[in-house]
Figure 1 (cartoon, one colour):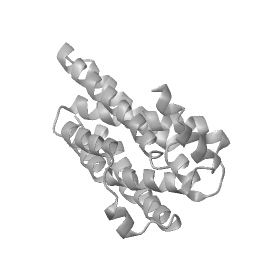
Figure 2 (tube, rainbow, N blue to C red):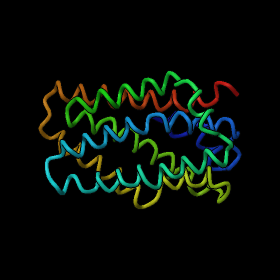
Figure 3 (spheres, helix red, strand yellow):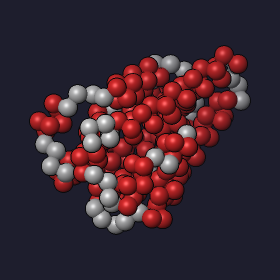
Figure 4 (cartoon, rainbow, N blue to C red):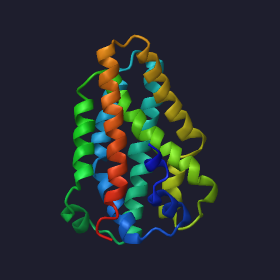
Length: 202
């Protein structure tokens, strides 16, 4: 967890000094599992116990498929990553693992869905808030990725997801708790490998 939160990628991103090729590789791969993330988040929303529990998830889904997806498209253009380059780059091992984890969790229990979502979003909020005070305004490819993962709204999303998981934990069996722990830890491990992979060709 600490290695994810304090990864050199996050510091270089906030400082605006991150190598363009490193950022491009990272964004191409991150965008690759956006569809799997949408499937997972949508599945969690469908499995939630009430309308009140679904609404914040629906609102977050709108941000992911709207503002965040638009950030990707604008960033690819700014970094000179055309469609051919995006399509020809193979999935890295962490991307393959993340897609598989998200798709598998989307078919598992409600609590396991939440475990993956909480690990992903809480870890990103943690590094986002850590680097925010030092984040430069330009280039937008750096600043907006920090902004998408920090601040009041994103904090409310993480609080919402953690709250749902805490509520579900109250009635979990020991076996269910163990399954949740496995999903959470797997997601954290992949997050670290994902950051590392962006530097593999540099």
